[in-house]
Amino acid sequence: MTSNIPQTIDLGIVVNVNWLKDHLQAGVIRVLDARPLDEYEDGHIPGAISIEMNAIREEREGVDGLIVGPESFATYVGQLGITRETPVVIYDDYHGMLAARIAWSFEYYGHTNVAILDGGWSAWEANGFSSENRSAVPSVATYEPVINDALIATHDWLHQQASNDKVALLDVRALVEYERGYILGAVLWGWENGTSDENFFLATDDIRSELAQRGITPDKEIVTYCQSGVRAAHTYYLLKKLGFERVRMYDGSWAEWSVLEAK
Image (tube, rainbow, N blue to C red):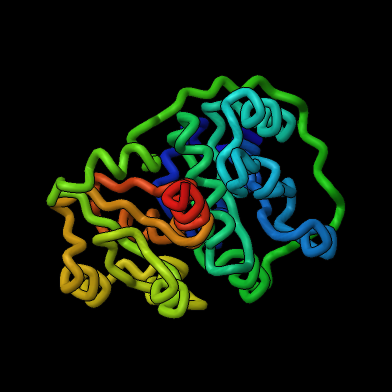
């Protein structure tokens, strides 16, 4: 039987569980499970492969959680059977936070066809869709990374933009973290404001208005940051869903900023 699913799939930013179920059997999409390995082994979406977020993050100069270099990234995702042309859907059970960090890493290395599963594992289970607990073993592929510098903010870049009123910093940590210290000029808006159990990314007019009241508007280039670039990745994608075209994430976030500014 020939599948009527096209071999080229434009995923967009987020897909829902019904869409994924309908497209799963075609074998075109690589599904990645970003939950801890023990949760993956207890049951996962059929054909999904476990991906460890920290396998594509590393410590450099006393700062943990930074994205690995291109060769390390390519080696790891190649072992997952992924090329830069493979459509990738990532899910977790943490409001899309882990999936977002991984998706951003793929995008940073030139992967344009990557999406996050809205509702994640909980939504898949709630719909009564089938699962399995055997581990998928992919064939090794060759991944050719191409760095997209427009997605990332660095310590040096932020200093260069310090007087640019068309660049706005969005701190998505908790209030208690913000009060201990923040990047000068950053406004606070907790990442959890943009998510719910049913919808991981609340791209609503109310959210757009909340952000606008803080000076976060689509005419500016927005930089999201948190403690180590995980929560910030979630808000990065929320802004993309809201139609913001120029968004960066500060990979090192407060963990790096606080160390480098103390030197």
